[in-house]
Image (cartoon, rainbow, N blue to C red; front, side, top):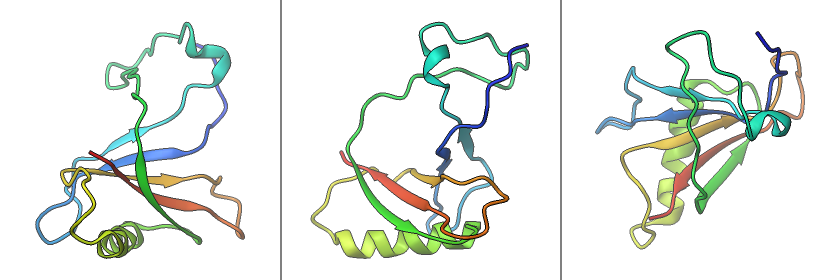
Length: 117
């Protein structure tokens, strides 16, 4: 019953297939605003879960524009190429992050994160 404004980033956990495309199953995560983190309100929708994301070290790349799935897949591929075979990171998932509201037409920020092992 509490209203919480939109937070950034909106983070989508992507599970890539062998060909680099994304599986149909994704997990969308929203940051709980600071004032609610100590005691978050209980979701009234059973499909919404509160999870604590542990600290992590990431490899990241940033790009602009209105991001679509193909953009995240392409930038994940570019990040993978840039890291080469020496970098150790999780290959079973990565994060697709958007920082801007839909009505912001210019200067948009999107990121792909690989989690360092």
